[in-house]
Length: 276
Image (cartoon, rainbow, N blue to C red):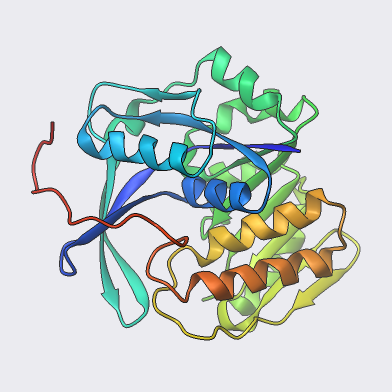
């Protein structure tokens, strides 16, 4: 089985801690899919600066196919973060060259040749979802906390498996999942933080308790790792309950270290301003 992740890549910068690392929702999910045994390709765009070089180097070191990760003249995306205990605080995001990305027919055809395509709202992929859905690949989408956006809701007619981050809105999860499946999803999954997770397939709800973490250092990346483990189990034909549990187990491991996977390369951030 082969997976293609399409979309965002960036550098998370914690200036107060003097540390940064390569990441992005699609990056984190893709790295975990690869670690879980799926041959994974990363499709998208990055820049030509030093941070962009590091992103490409990291993906290749993790074993992902970057043949269709194209370079555009300009900077990588940067997310400025802080910490509040074990929770990361999003302070500022600079999209870099991804603000101008336009997928090529070759990129889309390459992605369509995989068994699974996974993407995110930050991928600028919405207009291409109908064509991708017309192929044989299973189409997965991380809606994060944007389930109420009109543009996101419009994509649900093309997506088969959708993921929703609802830790702060657990009481609304059942209604949100029902609506999402009503709009076209085959399966809708919500992560609920310490309240575990829930899935709706149009006929029944399946619930799973959270797995207790041995320690919690940073919750960043928990959702992406959950998605990767869930999808790997789902592709293997396992029941929804087992898919949810697989996601919970990996997420509990990921929160035990600082970055979204382990081991992740850490460096001091470059000085602020344009980079070579």
